[in-house]
Image (cartoon, rainbow, N blue to C red; front, side, top):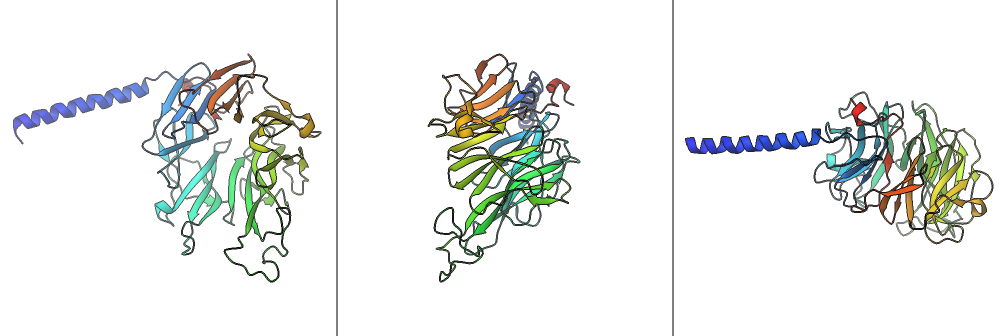
Length: 403
């Protein structure tokens, strides 16, 4: 290499170094985000969007992957998210809310990397564990795309990749949700049965086809879910519901930890509101009887009622936000939370920790409602999406207080 070539090389290297330093400095010089903080995923799933309620905004992108944000660490200083190749299984990561210190959290050496992944991670309130749904490929020549799904968990003793342990065994479990005190994990577990004459009928015994009917791929088994709980130490586990037919989904703990709300569907897209106490042998309470289409639901911060985004409910075709009372019949007694008529098609309601703010989707745009002031702010009208928002926890005091 000639002296001129060496000089040119050093000059280019120097310019690239300065450029990298400028990028790093720009990242580190971002104004610190305040509290509370809400995060969502952009419609293109190429970035995570962070907003604080004083007007701060930030975009986090971690490469050419599909992004999905799921929550925060208990101090709010880290985001919990998944990344995946298009069409691939996702992996769980965490990073600081400035995008630095990205860490992959799982390792699993029993299968090739492309044959396993994890979804729906939930960080326990005490910060000690992350629970998630783990997908594993099944070696089945007749169905090469078959997978099993288990509720897994890892200890958060550090941010190095860890081999998961498992709470569930059937391979048909989803939707893990920690209780507010972190002592229990709720999830749904699917059972298989031979279908009967209609959605409310089952052939008996359920593990055999009806008399004279041979089991074959043309007579697929029906899979329907019930609600289960397991203690954080894995020592105690039991079903909370045992519906003979129909399916449970979307378990939601009340903020005081006393109840779990859920949706029960006797058949697909025919939803009703229910709740149950977390005690073995508890009897579930039905809160509505006429079928609707529930898009999502949560609890009011004081645990006095649930809040649901429901369509075809109370003679209203549009999906709006309804208070679901815990006594009486919601078909008659539910009331609208918002009277703002300029906002339509509500979905994914989420309250922040102290209940002042409500984030939700309206026509795919993320809205932050200040319930104290009675004002509404459109947060991402230029980047609409269709994923749930997640709020920073009560422990988050602003980025300036993060280590």
